[in-house]
Amino acid sequence: MSNFNNEELEKRFQEKIDKEIKIEPNDWMPDAYRKNLIRQISQHAHSEVVGMLPEGNWITRAPNLRRKAVLLAKVQDEAGHGLYLYSACETLGADREQTIDDMHDGKAKYSSIFNYPAVTWADMGAIGWLVDGAAIMNQVALCRTSYGPYARAMVKICKEESFHQRQGFEILTTLCKGTEQQKAMAQDALNRFWWPSLMMFGPSDSDSPHSAQSIKWKIKRFTNDELRQQFVDAAAPQADILGLTIPDANLKWNEARQHYDFSEINWDEFWQVLEGNGPCNKERIAARKAAKENGQWVREAATTYAEKRALRKTA
Ligand code: BYC
Image 1: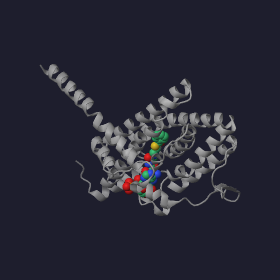
Image 2: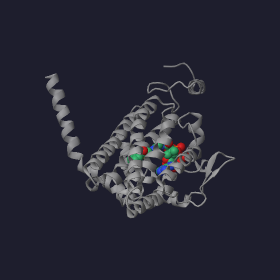
Image 3: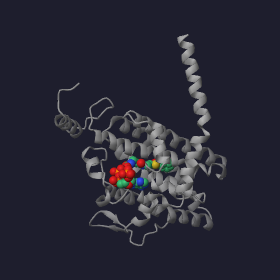
Image 4: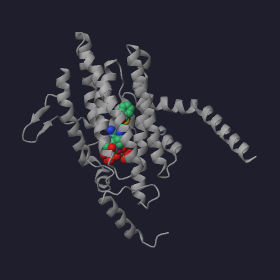
């Protein structure tokens, strides 16, 4: 046990962070740092798992075998991301099942974007391009987050997300080079997914209660608004390449700022979705709860099998 008092320990902890030394599971950390990380990482894990639902729904309806195989692989990747993140969360002492129950009971959030429906094949393109694109923008920064297991999980996740983003862009490129109807379908998907994708970065900095402390602890390396701006700056020229129009009359390159200007987000819609009133909130939670109940027998069988094996070893 250490002889230092809490104040001294916190000082040393912050010095480590300032020197870019990663915090590892057995290192001393303030309770609030641990709690904040468990909150963010578990919500991140829930987002990956709930994020499988809109795309999983299209696996049987993908237009050809190649598209089906690619989409299936992508959805499986998202399951893997969820697993790394739940494991990272467990290194902080969190109970995985408890974090999942917290989501089912509405105590823990998952990304707002997955409360919007995926109604056409073009939505698979828009999700890859915009949703995975926004996720990468956020997650590349998280590769340098101060908690070692989270940062290392992010490196692998980012490699996969980058493939996801390209497959989405490729779906849209194909549709945009197709018939007028196909191009219209791509435009319609962009119209519906643009604003919810910008909301993925979280509330504006002035309304983000966790940002200041998370930046100080280097859990977050950029603020919500900074990452959102980076995303808009990257996506606008990509929309031009596709020949699609971003649904924002105020989107315009600002030479002085060296950034795109864009309209104010509909924050009322954002908070409504967070409160459970988005188009698909109830459906998503019902699907996750059913998955947990339906998988109960598998968990029981696996536990019994593990217990039997352990007994055999000691016999
Ligand atoms: N949706 O103080 P703030 C993916 C909550 S999935 C819902 O700014 P923070 C993919 C926030 O949690 C990738 N809730 O918080 C998967 C907080 O609520 P609590 C998902 C949101 O944490 C499948 C409150 O609002 N990525 O890649 O400093 C297919 C105040 O916000 C949202 C991550 O999870 C939202 N959009 O910053 C395809 C990245 N925004 O906890 C793709 C990791 C905010 O106080 N997470 N809230 O009840 C982060 O980087 C940060 O947690 C956030 C928010 C930037 C999201």
